[in-house]
Image 1 (tube, rainbow, N blue to C red):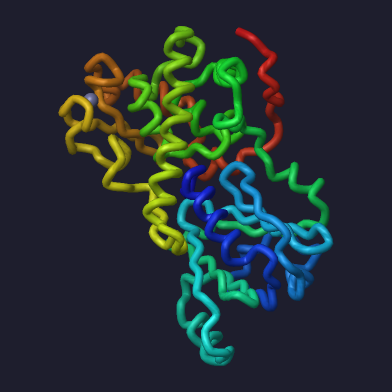
Image 2 (cartoon, rainbow, N blue to C red; image 1 turned 180 degrees about the horizontal axis):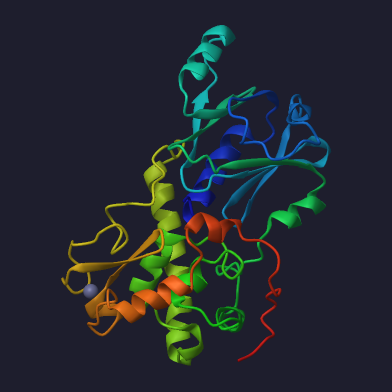
Length: 318
Ligand SMILES: [Zn+2]
């Protein structure tokens, strides 16, 4: 799932290409992508893009008259861009319909933005709303760690007792962090994914705060450099330069031990036992169960969970 660094770089690339440009035509090829009926998405046609924002792992595009399109790529959704070529709309439409994975096309006066989604479970979503006030409804309320003071981070982290893996990836607690960067953050902080937030020392929380900020910032810079002014076409959760995520069985760049994994529900977390768990393997049944109990069945469910939760204002204590 594209996480904060990926989304930031997507937004920067979009700003260069569609900001102040007019959306001329929208085409949707799947019935499930668009989740709102009013205002109709066609009302965006002829409007100019006024601004772009990140809301958690979502991308919000603001148009004239305060119309907003909110895009959630979920796990397999990706964006693509082609500059405006010679005007051959017939040919372009044919090409689009032949590519079954292409779910939506947004033709701007500057080029064409398309959304593709791999796999059979179509989870990516588009919402269209009128009025920036409605955007708040899309914000799961996670803390923006790059903007938060240490005290705010500590309060939020310990507002509920969860495993660290869950606390970092829960969009209601922390904003923009998913399975990949949480693995990297925990490795950088040298903390166990199964450690409980209620049992962390102040020093460990401080380490986690620094590691979260550094990991998100460094990866944003790295992805920006890799993209190099082009459009980010290679967005993936698995990158060779990652320390542990997706590197089960390979060596830890810090200590040389083998990267371990633990599977729980539909998820997997990667960690270095020597660096993060005092050498203890989390494949141990009880720890595995702990992670499993602390999770909904899948990342998608965690992402989709809404409501029925106590708002997190960092004021509750343990
Ligand atoms: Zn290690």
